[in-house]
Image (cartoon, rainbow, N blue to C red; front, side, top):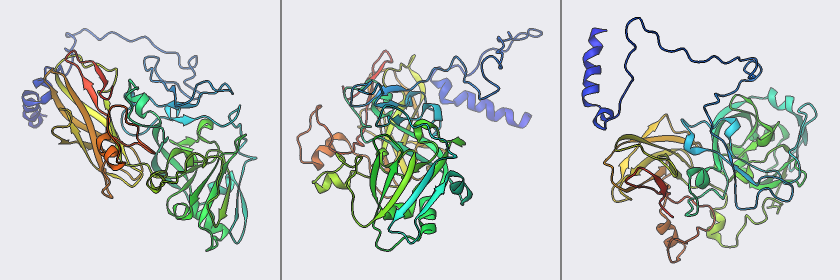
Length: 415
């Protein structure tokens, strides 16, 4: 015990937290005086035994979001956004995971004992797999994000939930699609595959066969339990790094073909401009500060840990930098954990705020060398004039700034 005390005293003398005026702990109770006992919760009444519930003091919630009116003609919310401002670590709880609505009046209510996955087309042996058949095969468990193409920096948004809440990151368990295709005997003439879900209006997407044989997963579990109905129970196709619409929910059919098929999901996601087409599949390297972010408030000057998320469809994040002066200088951030391929990673930067108005932002680079751009750089790439109303074509991975006023209030730096 005695050998550790000097090191602890040294930390308390020189720590950035005390330098910023932050109190590290409360005073201990007087001798013989026990701390007040908190009220007890009756677990049976609150459902703690069967499935469990979070504390009533934790209020993080998803919000309706997206570019269409909600509710729509079917009475459905178009998209539902994750509360990134309240996130810690890199795992999005299943109950807070982003999702997009189904194309129809109802969420598919599927009995896993009756559900099947048909794989046919350019294969030697067309096969129909039950859910139990899939679960018998060798499995993988991996972290991957899903992100909607509409997720982007926006001058109209007030919070990080509104700018970037249409992405989430979960632990997915399932069977590699390549394993299933090998069982069927993939023909050499197959260059594309079409994945179809069990929606009323059939959702289907065309994807390159190279992606199928690389890292696609037919997932049956999410964060240690069966995939939730909103996210595709009982089988969901995970297409790591690709735009969210390709991650087919309620997966029921895969057809191997020798050409690109125009499907319901593909309409509107194609562009004759080769520049746009090249950017319409893979999510570019992206990062965003989640604390402090829009509509949060810093109580006063002093020490804060700036925290955020970074991700890339091209691989793992290699580096994140943070600026606390509007982009004049950049500082290397630290990772909280080891970045994974096509997954969110948590970054942090130790900051002593002097109480003056400023602007903070982050940028990242992935392990294949792709860098997150500014909006000005994107405008230059498209050879278009830049102003505050500039709209990014295709997928938008531009830098999102947050403005901090002298009273500690945080607002959108693009507004």
